[in-house]
Length: 219
Image 1: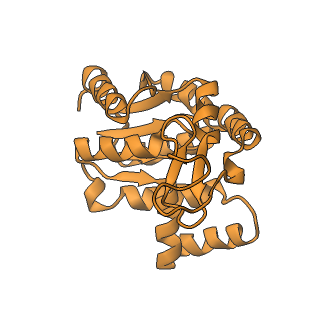
Image 2: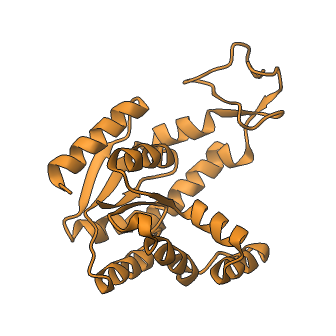
């Protein structure tokens, strides 16, 4: 299957992408991984992206599209892939359409993870990170530490990252609504969108997604 995964920040896209890709035996292709791989390998696209990033500028769509196309051309993606974080806007969605059409391929589904905005804010703004080890992550509601403000693992101080503040989260949501959400309508017009609730336990959401993909977009 060839799937695009969309949803607001805090919807759990990265977690679900990993589970779904494993269940479907297809590669999980994320924008973050594409950038890291191209930059670390010193590819021409990676050099271009790094130059923009070092200058504090957004990487142009054509560079991101080029990276995605190269990755989708790899042998392990021959029988399908799951795109996470790409396309990020309608221009990228149209470029993906053209790329797949040129290769005589098409998407099977666009999986839309739906989460109420207040829940997104609660999920992200409630995160607390250990200053000693950022791998130690807690949540004031869902996985609170035994002692408030103290890491259960090493006793380090827990803090809220600037990126996790409510104001920043709401700004990110606004960017999602204005830039990324329109791709859902773009793909809905093609009959590709499958919307599921991303509320509940991780395995519950995965089961819900797999059932929706099997029932409405069989491989």
